Image (tube, rainbow, N blue to C red; front, side, top):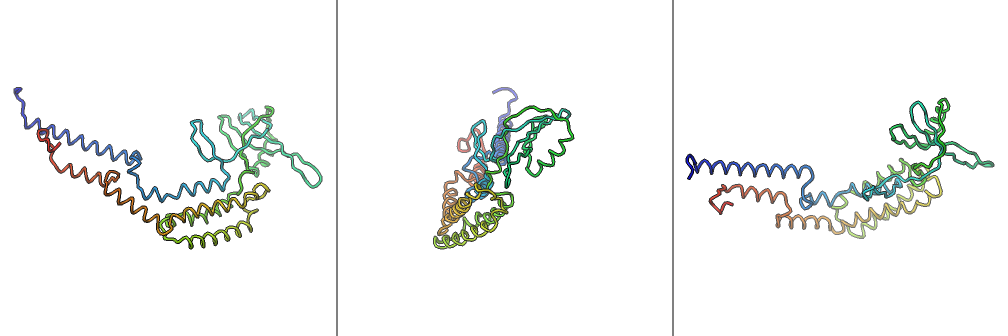
Length: 294
């Protein structure tokens, strides 16, 4: 044995270092869980199964006429419907801002009129602004007093308002009704199939009456938009019906209780069970010379 070596002090220091490492590991695990890096099996099962935000977001995207698009990495997302239009490009020499003006033909009672509509503005730094039709006339009027350089014609991507079946008022009015049915309370209710059929019948009649009386005010101001009248109502009703059917005979309640019991009995996917197991292990004093404490 080396001179000056004290076994008791050495063992004490070793135990303290080991305890410090265990505490650091617990802190790291807690930090990862707080940041959302916990394994999927540790996520709150009830919160996941009763999540309604994604359902409501998909319905809103549908009512707004959003289309499925893809990032360069191949990931899908919902975005505003767009189209390419041929526009005349003029540039402000002073600010470097480019303006894209589309020539639109409007047919009147007895003649055809050509009308200039500003559809997009691109700033010097490349940022783009889609111009609302209500703002186009005002901006073009101001541009008459500015010396602009013509850059010819170019195709530019703009928002396709024709693909949006409803305006902001229409979307908000329908979403306020839908959000009363796509809820956690609906999932956790106890319905019979007969009662669900009654609810869907009443809701379908009411939605049809409401949209029929207000469809023009809610943005359905063209033949194409009007053609989506029936499919709008059907999609809303089918989505709500799917949510309601999860509650037939209290099926969702029973499903959640069953999974909760299984998780607790196995302990492997329960954060609480794991913490209890760690606490139980920590009650034994660790010793490097006692295998029973390893």
